[in-house]
Length: 115
Length: 115
View 1 (cartoon, rainbow over the protein chains, first blue to last red):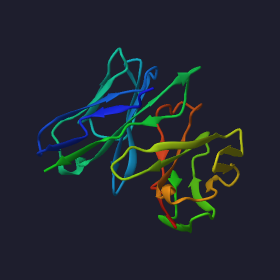
View 2: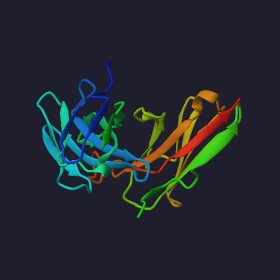
View 3: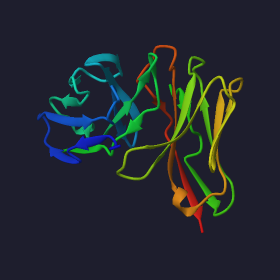
View 4: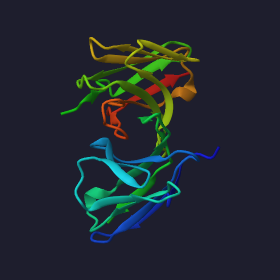
């Protein structure tokens, strides 16, 4: 079974631009979560989608948004990029069994550099 | 305020010996705990998990111990191998408590296994 895939793997943007990152979950996984990893803050939860609905959201500004499609693929968007948005963005997918989230499996991440 | 703490940023162990990585948490609502291994520029790889109804879980060379009263868990790797050298993250969630899709991560411990 193929793992979680993320595109693009690397991205360079300038301040003020916007960016869209894509995540394809493991086949059969309907929950997709997004995380930001920076050296100072570690891994921080952005949001989680299940059946095209955002169920949970972390403490990030409204510039960070996402969506999920009917095939469970997910995108996250960051508008008006700031230097501090430079980070590794990780997507994780999970089965939901009996209403309970199972183990999250991570993709390789998208490395975003904002200049 | 960090809810999941890994107080040792680094650990060095000789090949063949035991590696013990520690993790403390503060939120008593956490009921599911996971360990991930991460190489630079890659996504975290799931290693092992434990739910709060257990105090021990084994998978090959990896064993996780949970002490709920002390809000402490540890990962034991026996025997340690040079390929185990990576950053290890402890993560927790309130899987049954409604915090679905939201893993809280520690800052990580960098394990170096010397031949």
